[in-house]
Image 1 (cartoon, helix red, strand yellow):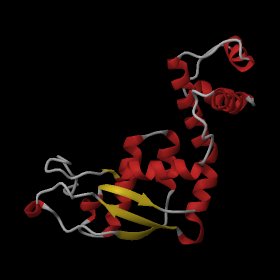
Image 2 (spheres, one colour):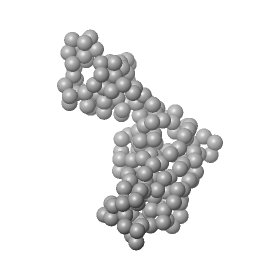
Image 3 (tube, helix red, strand yellow):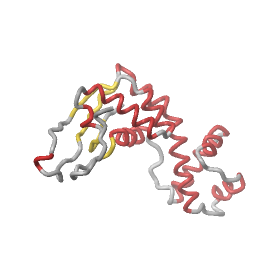
Amino acid sequence: MPQKTIDFGKYGARGIKGSEAVARKLDELAGGITTPVTARRGLMARLHYLTRTAHARKAAHDAGLTVTDRTLTAWLGGKRRPSKANLERIERAYRSVRRQNVARHLLRRLNSSGGTRVEIHPLNQSQVPRPLQRVVEYRTMNVRRWDRIVAAWAAGDDQGLDDAWTDTIVDLGSQWGQYEYVTNVGFAA
């Protein structure tokens, strides 16, 4: 794609990839446990979520939480505390399982009524020298098909999400490349 940004930030522009902003917003819409995993309450809530059914245990194992049942029982009983590496694995497994569990519901919400209106806030050029600044403005668009975006997000496939998002913003017209990096992407479902 000729519009792809090769050297983002070279002249001082700031922002994040649009697909990353979409993933953050989808995580926000998915909700979940807000107490940090380092707090006992947050740890217990995540462990209960990941161990309440055989399906949840299998999904947690597939997501990287590969500890014995004896260790899980000790953690749940408060007899032992997970190491820092295991806390990170628990958080990663929780996010992965949560995404898989809410993806179908979220997809139905986003695709209903002909799609969801998306606000794209352009990158921040306040640090770019004046002669090098582009004219980039706030844009809105209606995304009608969220299937590839939500599937890549649920699978944790960053490259797939980036490709799906790039294919979506092409609908902005000939200047779609200016919205590859943004300060924010907003939508509600």
